[in-house]
Image 1 (cartoon, rainbow, N blue to C red):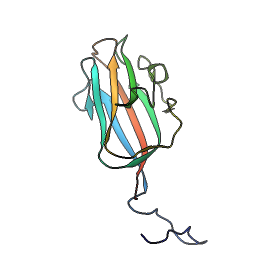
Image 2: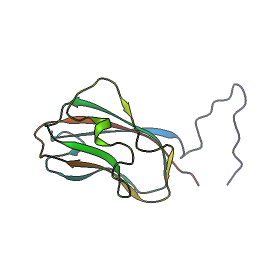
Image 3: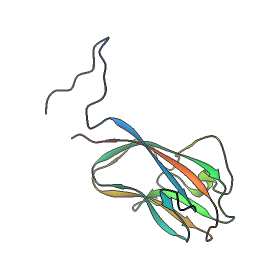
Image 4: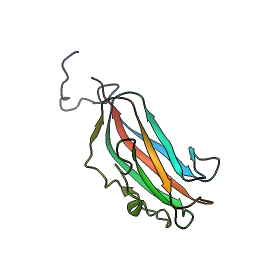
Length: 141
């Protein structure tokens, strides 16, 4: 692997491909047009991670309030609330402001394949829409 250098003044730095930071936007809700369609209580895959990545952060914003008594956590198969616990997301209320993850000190490194998950509990939902934003980079080494 070649030596990596910090760019000099005036040089443009676009990251060491493929380790550029990226933002994934995932819609989660009851409508069939969402990326992740939720209806019943259960665990739903937000993102399949099939290679090593670094997660720099995760944010959510609830656009449409979820059915009363529905709870949501965002994490992975190791820790269901690794990024968000239910009280942080507060799915029963809407908000214009993005809420940052609190369940873990980020950055967090996934060394191999892992699925990032949403766990829905409490009640079967009839309504709800949450936007999830994942700030990540594919590990180049």
